[in-house]
Length: 268
Image (cartoon, rainbow, N blue to C red; front, top):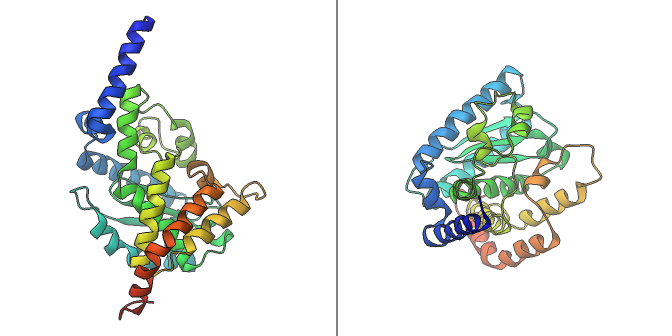
């Protein structure tokens, strides 16, 4: 293809993104919310089945009980925040692994690895910060937007397959949608900021001190580079002092929400 042809395609991609947005491009290509959520649910089932066969699904430890309790406390507020038009079937699985990681698929399918809770000695509020952050990625359909961008640039279903296959043991055919869901790929800065903002609001509404969103990322930053643990979250959720400062700037807005929730009859 000549330079002029490449230029026309580039201009077309930019124009389509500007006019209709990456989510709409994804819809046109069959990545609409319902279809993407259904595909994610199937892939999630495969991942959990694989983990279960390896004996790594944790349902009984204190860590697993805590994570699920916090998840269930956040879930009603996540449902209220859902503006996708499709109800989410939220599910949480705790997997016993040294990885410092957590993720959410489209439609609310989530995993938290025990390593991030136990190695960082996270408080309940800090766990809520991580869960709320990942919930917001799903609620704002960041994976869908990324799918639309990849369609425009011709990179759909090609990135991250090897890493996911090594992590889950799934076949190449099975990992296609997982790869496209972005579990092992970094979100953009704007998506990260949006997830931070939505996450602190969710945790505040559920009665968890949003200041914990600062301390958990400070813990992640401190452990990066000096831990033998696999710090996966730091590769897919790039951190910086600037990011921490942005979260601090949100606290005056969300702290009153937390204080009101704490005084409610079911607040803690």
